Length: 416
Length: 151
Ligand SMILES: Cc1ncc(COP(=O)(O)O)c(C=O)c1O
Image (cartoon, rainbow over all chains, first blue to last red; front, side, top):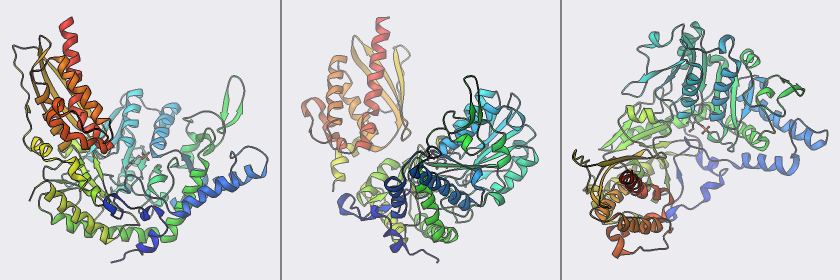
């Protein structure tokens, strides 16, 4: 097994010094919701405020110069992380904003590839997070286009059996998740993108659960847009990323209007700065972007391949452990093939909220509920699940703590 | 363990054998039906209420949810069944106060009966909404029923 040196990684994350309920150590299995932040990130943010703080791209003083350099430096780091060009990386406040930016920009543009009308189709999947579903539902409503979706198989894979019916000349946008935040399924994005492009559709990838966990190269992925949130990738909250193909970003109208995003303004009209500035109206979340720059640097210094191998080993161990618990139903792929370190399960008739409550007594933090994927919950006939998700600071002992915690939960609720 | 203050035996009993669960709908009576959801966890309750002469004649409900929400709805149903709306609202107010108390109040056992077992929930902010789900559904149904009687 190829595990990371978790003890030395943990030393970078002060939160692990905290004592949980009943003096338990923190077993944090909720990185799918948000990750913890290493000192390197916190220090970068603090350093920005203590040494360079000024509004970027404005002012002629030294601090403004340094702030702009720090902010643009962060953009270069993120671009490098994605195998992209810096000008194709837009900072937003979150993945949610990135996806809304796209949906609104498309309808603001409303010409060429971006024109949508009755008869056109937007394709999503049943396993989308609400953030990659509702913006498209609403775009369909605004334009008269029809929303369609890939189903999921009982194993928790995308059901591609009717892909030729779903991706046709009518398809204008295909928006799917790279890795499901509930099932852990990693979708065959490149194949789907190839088919979509053959029909002239734009492909949007929700990389919230993938970019923090394995290597991404936007060129080989073959998609047109990619969104993720900094806070799930060791960075502060309040910063997200939208990467787009240069020619599409150039063609698109902005979504938010105001300062910084303009080229020239009169009382009657305005013209736009080139991308990415066109999409970054107002003073941006500078310190957070700088924090994200430090976060991707931290991840790269460990190595995305090593991170992926580490999480795979944890997932393997967890799958074995969970599959051996009677009364536990794991929802999603049962092997580590094309799946990441996100594991959702039901435990007899014990409600996830109750499972989470007992685990909390042992310092184990999991997510419970519908995971902002309500349609997927309906599909699997559950009101919610308990979800454990792994990251670089988790080790095999954390997985074992989860397994023991589940046994304790069963005992507490007297299910044998 | 701290957990035992949350999951008292009475609560687990109501959870395993909930009272008034299973929707009744007597066609000869005017039934107010409400459906409430806790959007943060997906728990749902559907509640049927028959009020006559300002008195809860029949309450029944169905739903999915955690032990706290299910037990609390069961206990609430026992408490309001047969009571006048004024009395029921008095219980409801007292229970809401208990839930807002952050563990500082033990609850009026004379008024709240089994519901005092839920006092520990008020120490777990994330669970207060679970405990209140059924009660808020009842409040909504009762107010709608009152409106209906007026018109
Ligand atoms: C797959 C997926 N998409 C989108 C989001 C939305 O991210 P944020 O809330 O940071 O905008 C999440 C976060 O839970 C997610 O897991």
